[in-house]
Image (cartoon, rainbow, N blue to C red; front, side, top):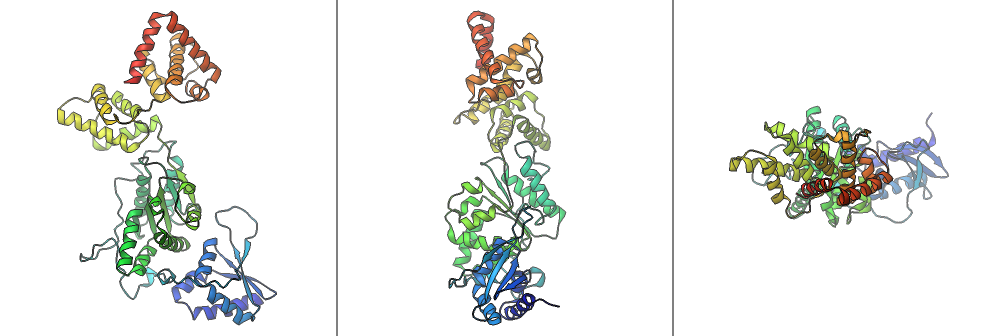
Length: 478
């Protein structure tokens, strides 16, 4: 036997079905469940917060009229919203429909999404096709060289890479939707976005994958306004299974473009399609983006890419050389990795410049040629001196391995090298004493202070030791 609340809602759905098209009904009303009728207040359960917002923006008038038709002038509606991305076992909370005379948002371009599987009465123009040229299928715009295979994993990017691979394996079905990848320029967020798209295409050839920069998206929207085909523009993007949008921060201040992307985002997310978004800032740091859009960026996972450590930088260079079939002395590779520490793009650029210098001038690739090239390559920037770099210089000078420096051995030559590494790290870096100690054999800050005092004393009393310090100082400042 049907409950009263079920019967009332079924009657409401019959009226609604006659007033909206089939696809809108299937998308926005079929998932709704009625759960309670109390004192002429019908409570319906909706799948998410933005589902509720969409109904409020587009169907509030229809819903109010339908409820009053079934329950009389005093009839009202309440929503029970399922909390998203939460392990909270409590029942969904309830939000009441506002009693203000809010009007429906008149935006036909997003209220009638097109289902590709059902076909359409007219062909939707592809915004990536130049007018007058032959129509082509949606091209993913993916760079095949930016694959997961070519993406070097390290502590700096492990979370983002793992989440990206999970998304590519099961797009739209994980908790990482959207996946928001952010970092300063040159650390691999564009590479990772392409890698996700390529892996999705490999795993699911039938899916429509599209990579687009925010600047392309903005220009296409401007063109659609000029050509009066905004509906087609929105419908095109609503058909994408996996949308990868790069540098979303460029939407800042562009209110109309943000509005249309907001509705595209809602449609794709509601239909289980995957969104991958990149930015040079974390969501909370982006200025000029509407709060409702920023809140959606936080629904899934926000993962940052950090500056790669020394081992990762060396692995990046070795991977590039292996891919190009080029051999290079290991000390040169290490010198490049030590010299350029903040940007993977600059690191690879320096490698290419070095190979070009060697080829054009017919010179062997040596540490001296690398030094000359690096001086020109980073002459306008202050080269960062790191603890890793200082340890490498000290260990090379005394011909010992870095691992020995970080071991617990008390051999005199190792202890002396360790103390020098601590001394120069305090002098040339902004690292705290505790950080220096952690990198130099997991020592405490008191040990670092003792090492610095010991080195200063030896400089004043031991001429040979003073010469060591001066030579190492020159190598550090090269």
